[in-house]
Picture 1: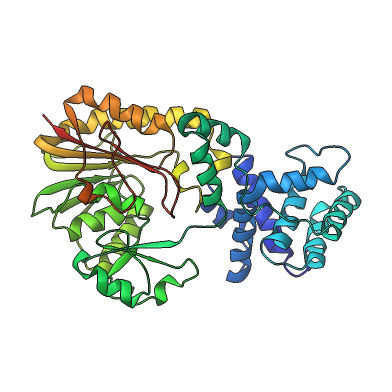
Picture 2 (picture 1 turned 90 degrees about the horizontal axis):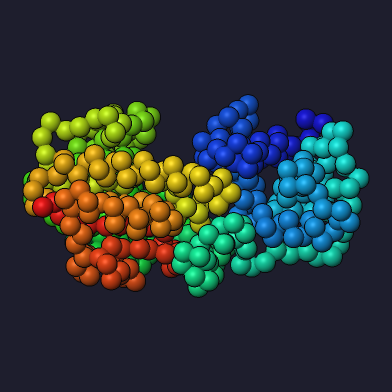
Length: 414
């Protein structure tokens, strides 16, 4: 059975889905373990694609499966998982139905192969299709509709339909028009270029010389709010993978980038080397480390649920629970309280999360004002096209137009 062509990739996809759905592990974190022993890079990529697209379409896949079974399969049944994997290959990835079936059945040793074969046969003969706009998982739909309304969940479903386009941040914003032309892209702000999704990053003009780096337009906003550094000091906390560090260094700040994980800091160092930018790198936990003296600015991109990046990483829709959000919000509040004193009087603090949860954004910004911090409404000229500050002064970016969900609040220290 294990000699069937393509079967190891499907088994790896099954392991990835188990890691996300049962153990709550991030898809990217589970990838190395699940694909261990698969030497072919194309097979590793296939395993990732199957798992990622399954997570993008689970409610719709389950609706199809349930329409073809007399008795509903349990959510965690192996047969349901195999059916999801086979269907997503045929309906999303373009695998011929017979090949999807041939690689599905061997994963059910000792299981209901006849049932799975019958369900797939019924659906494929009936020309089954997935919705063009996927459904959000019910718990996510309920949570987000309560927080933001049904218009937002509709936009989120549209964003989930496919991975977003690729955004690049330029080292030199003055060259925006030049790079828009060179990359055949479009721009939503100075220093930003958006290109198509199906591109090989390392083959694009400007990659080798370090003229730009990959960074969603939303993620570029926190550093934009700090403006030109003019040699002033800034702490970039929880800094990896380094997009904000590079923005700040390119804007003339003296940057100290702090990151807890040495592996992630190594990647930041590689990015700095490629872009010929410099920063002092510190491996440390923000809740245990502190600077020798106050600085002119602090950018805290706090660890969060990352639900705002669901269009690129659909696993967050399935592994993040209410308890995770509450625990992370507690950590964020502790971080803000700790770092507030690290800012010089009159200095700036930017708090940001790539989260769509009010507990990790608006609620933290309200609490932050107890720590000698005054909320400052950004100048509209600092914000990308289509992004606006809210009445209270913070920036809440909801899904739409290829933007990640984000929250940003700018403060000055009294």
